Length: 184
Image 1: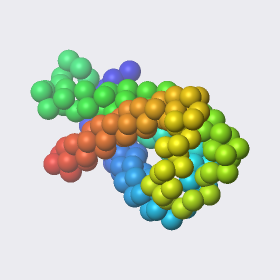
Image 2: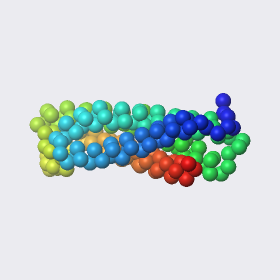
Image 3: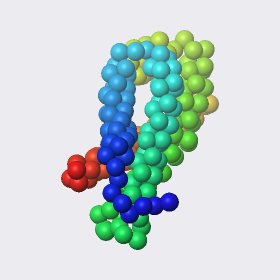
């Protein structure tokens, strides 16, 4: 159900609101994560992230999906120029990457962190402030507990992949905001 007419003011406002909401969430969650990392103990930080990040990732996926949908409805494929085609491609990449991050990487990270916290608690770890403090104790735990070492390496991998997805979505949203500002 595409239309070749110009979107209404309300539709443009909704799309701008969705795009700016997603962009703002990305910047805010990234900033807050750095602050919490240095001021909260390891388990509190992990608990907050396990509640906050899935909500953030799913809401971001929804914003990206609705942005793509609104743009596609008002830009029929047979009337697209190169820049509009690229914009739809950017929205599609954002939706895909956000959905993968929400459904796979974010979920796996939360599950792995919960398993690691149980092992850390049984060893009296996890109450130290900042993720970089008491590295020796965690390194020793990795050496002595094979399951913890495996979980730790998987957590590192999923966090890296999730961060790359997040950076990709930030780049897509930055481009989309620039494109939208240029076409106001």
